[in-house]
Amino acid sequence: MLIRTGIPNDLRPIIWKLLIQQQIVDIKKNMANITFVIYAIHVDHLMKQRDNHQKQITLDLLRTLPDNIHFMSPTCKGIQQLEQVLRAFCLHNPIIGYCQGMNFISGTAMLFLGVEDTFWFLVAVTEKYFDKSYFDYALTGAQADQEVLKELVARRLPRLAAHLDHYGIDLATVTLNWFLALFHDAVPFQTMIRIWDCFLLDGTKVLFRFALAILSIHENEVLQRCDTISVIKILKASVRLTYDYEGLFNLAFDNMQPFPSHSEIENKQKWYLNILRERLNRKQQLRKVFTSLSLEKSRFPTIEVVTFSMTHEGTGFICAGHQTKGIIIRFTLTNNISTMNKLDTEFDCKIFSMALREGEIGYVSLLSGYIVALQINDTKSEILWELKISDIALKLLYSDKLLYAALASGVLTVFEVYISIIA
Image: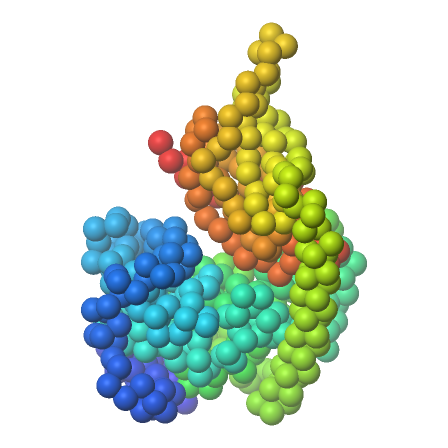
């Protein structure tokens, strides 16, 4: 009850550490003499073998807690320690490596714990609290939990479920990151920390309790919106105003009875996980067949996308390549004369779509299931961020700070994108 009513701030580091240590006793025992210190000592040498993780970690560091004085610049101690934790985890668990959300989890934990305890916090979350499939390359476990949540919403909040279904909105568009990052940047900080207190004690079941309670609190506001974009916007905006954590906790624990047991939720998770794995296996088999059929064609690059700049008349971009390569060519038309130059960024798979916004920012969707944001300056380009999504985005469209992605699964996903242009 102490934890549900709120851990005093001065006791939180101690209690969090105790809860974490209970989870990882067997992991530490199996690791024998391998410690965080050893990972930290060897991280620079060994991470050279995993440049793909290092690249994404570097991109994510400064956007983790940008308003916190300890995380504002590359020279800040918090940034350096956060990088140390994330890189050490990649060495500790190369199968999972680095995934979206880990920077937010680790950065927030570091506000209460030392660097080594933060490392073990991340280990506990990814290897004990969540199933090992949660942070795989397809986020299979996280997607399974979204299916469980949708089922619970349909049962507990049928009007909301029907409203979302009517406008073709996939709830996971909003709630996936609630689970992946433990409500980071979804609810106010104090509310999030109280949720973490309960999560460390009770595990993943409480995430469903809080997700349902939050949706219940803001249900009427969502039901008043009658178009897709407004529904998504109000859902995200209203949730960020969940300051009444006492009311939230009362609703989550006292007014949601009876709530499915741990075993019931676990059985549903396993059921959906098996379904998603079967779908994933079929996709992989089809992809192999498609790749083999396209092998002969793949020797020659083909033009996939042509898009024009919003701010520079007569300027556009051609995306070309094949199954294992994607390039972007900038072209300029002046007095019926065309000049073409290839950008310095290349991808190791096919480009499906490209959308442009002001400030020479481009969004590219890849065969690998990633969306990549680029800042383009003549033939130079810099990757601003990369995001793994649930399926390939066949078409991207940018309008009014919203990025629309039409997925191969038939789902339309909408992202709010805010980017500071690099000078």
